[in-house]
Figure 1 (cartoon, rainbow, N blue to C red):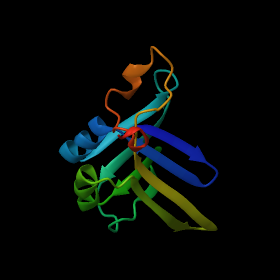
Figure 2: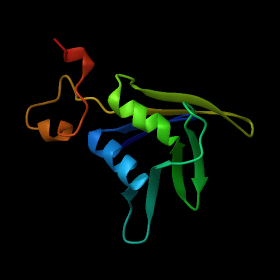
Figure 3: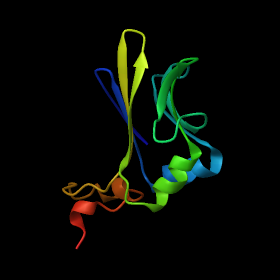
Length: 126
């Protein structure tokens, strides 16, 4: 799972393995470890979210994106790239994006294992 934060937007990219884990376990967790006792953690969970509208929360030091189960089930089998939602928050909005992680078109030689679980890139389809 890949996380990108830019301004007031958060984007998660999930590969096929992440998507399978999300459907099987109901969540995927990851993080940036800053030593033994410190980490920035983030998760995507199946839960109470409006269909087609993932939401983000910050709970107990963990950035959590919640997505509706039916969205994930349908998403896995379709060509849909992902979901985007503008979530109102105090003083503005947060843009929440959840997308499939596609294989890199121009990945440098030797880094191919990074795409082992990526979705096939539609830009390279014949």
